[in-house]
Length: 110
Length: 114
Image (cartoon, rainbow over all chains, first blue to last red):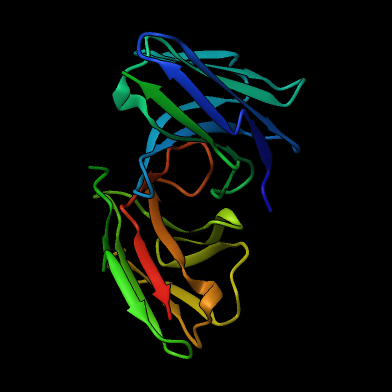
């Protein structure tokens, strides 16, 4: 079963615009990770944020985590056509396994 | 390139058959995870090994089994295959066995059961 839900399920924007994806989860977590998947290929790790962190940046990516609301958001600034992909959040608790959300399909039009 | 390798890339087989998927983790990673991605179930955790020992089990069917060898590569065995087993199977690896490290995913094996 899925841990959380991602919102929106699909997002279409123009190059240069910002893209925001949200993830909600149900149980307590140790960390939350974001992954990108291009068209049925492998998952690429983007960023990990721990439960005691509120915000993290990596290049054009900004992730926030609100444990009181059990939610996270991924912001991609100045989107490029190459950012077109599916984005997944995954939560980690005790042990190593990750529980994934359903994903957001991002389409960036040139 | 994550450093995790999986073979084969594609596998087409018939119902009732048995297949073996292979995974080599990143150099230095002791933990290996298997995940299944299908259209109806999404990405599901199957099983985790750490340094040769099973650490956690998820939604893994009894027809499926896995092991991690002394050289740390892992194999996922799927038997008595059914149409519904068609999916992308991913292997991931991390340094340790707890959830504070990033998991790096291989390119996946696409299994088609006819």
